[in-house]
Structure formats: C-alpha cells, structure tokens
Length: 192
Ligand code: MN
Image 1 (tube, rainbow, N blue to C red):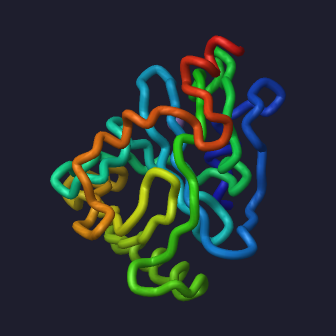
Image 2: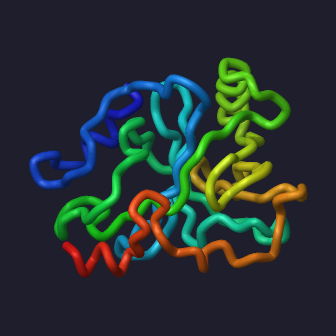
C-alpha cells in the first residue's frame, strides 16, 4: 500500500499529523507546499496523484525564477488529508518541529485542464522521471517541471520553473506566512 512507509515512520498517539487513508479531491487536483522547520528547514512540495500526495522535500524551497533549479528529494507518499496539516510535531517524533501551509491550490498537467487526463499524464511523467504541471496557487503559479536526475539514484529530482508570464525573479520565500492561518513558523513555535 502506498501509505505504508508514511505510517511506519509515525506514532499517531504522539503526533497530531493525520493517519489518513487514500482519498481524492472532488474537483480539480490539488497541491500543497508546507514549510517545515525540522532538523533542517525545508519545504515539502506535494501533489495529489491517484489518492495520495506525491511528496518531495525541497531544501531551498520553490523558485519562480527559471534559472534557479531547486533540489527536490523524493520522500514517502503522504495521505491526502496531510494537505491541511499545520502545527508542531513533538520532539522525539519523526520530522519533529513546526509546519505551516506555505502555499496551496489546484494543479493540472501542462497542456490539459482535464482531471483524468492530468492524472494519467502526471503518473506517466512520474514513472519516467519527468513531469510538467501547471500550478494555480496563492504564491506559486504557472508551469513547473519536476525532473529526476538519472545518475543520482531514485530520490534526487529538480524542481524548475518554466519561463512563462508567471516566471519572475521575486524572492517568493520572503512571503513567509501560512496561507491557511497567516502565521509564520516562528509564531507557530511561540504558540506551541
Ligand atoms: Mn518535511
């Protein structure tokens, strides 16, 4: 099962992360980017695909600048319900630290708005290690590619903005508040 690794790593009597199960959104496919102050700060980039969230940890976070290719480490599938998770993972638990929903929205495969066709294209692209998606987020918009680095094993991918009317040299990471609560990681930490 797709979520076995996710469940193995976590003790749901201790963490408030969702145990979750496979499920899908009703309308358009969704994506979420969580900013996560674990041992090292990173951004978790997740796209809905066939009932789970395919997930990559992006140390520097996404960029709107096509010249900035961002390392994205493939991690275990997360449950769909993880899209709403924000808060603190207790110390001693896997991924201990604060999490905010840094961005979220809908997405489709580049070239089609159709949900089924998008899932098929993205699933095929995932297998090939080369997928192209169009994001409609609050911070991230436009076309992005996720490309597996072939000589680097299975886990290392690059997240790259394609040049379009949304590409920009704006430092999008400077917009550091949650799109869910308006809180920063620091404010979550102070409140916990
Ligand atoms: Mn993380």
